[in-house]
Image 1 (cartoon, helix red, strand yellow):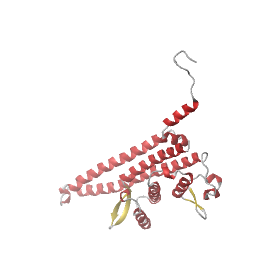
Image 2 (cartoon, rainbow, N blue to C red):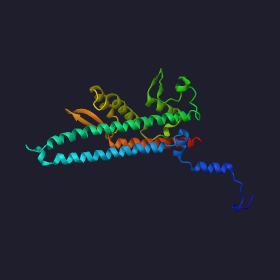
Image 3 (tube, helix red, strand yellow):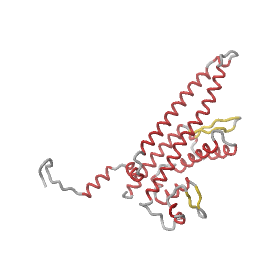
Image 4 (cartoon, rainbow, N blue to C red):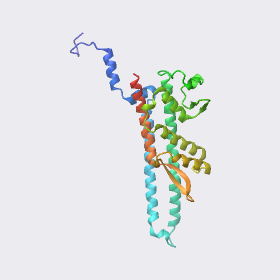
Length: 263
């Protein structure tokens, strides 16, 4: 049929149209379609903004402390209260870093947990677990629950191992960012300690985390010491940025995985 606005035939190839639309769909779009999270990027942008604000505030407070620390008057006998101000600024800076770390881990860890829960909930209708896989011995409703890990003898609650077990079983793991397992291990360990123990942890928890920290990149966590021993642990700006980058990589990698499988 011809005429009107169109100068040629109106017939089109549905298969070609579908292929063209698929080619224009980004990996991120595929993941959002799987999750039905229309505001996924907006949530992540909000987290990124808070992390940036924390770092700017930390730098500002640190600069103020440096000014007090280098003021020659505070060491004198009549310092006009500078020594007291310096001490107050020191403790403010010390625990401000703890508060910022708790805020960061309190946003990032639940976001990543809910992201993987949604990913595997979406995959359950698209992917089958391999025959004989240990997870098939679980109650059916738990097959795709990453909070549950099925070991060789028994199942247990273990978010990290559950995520990695399902990632391996579905073939998603090669599409995840490098160091995903290590990143999640460090983030979840820190989250558990901060939310159960607050800023100042029991000695045993401090020693345990310090030992675990030695397995991770040196710049991920900063330490405040007391009596020459670890006292407080902070998420470094480097690790906060790394976690946000990892989230972006998980979203994009899942989209590439879906494209590879025709999803």
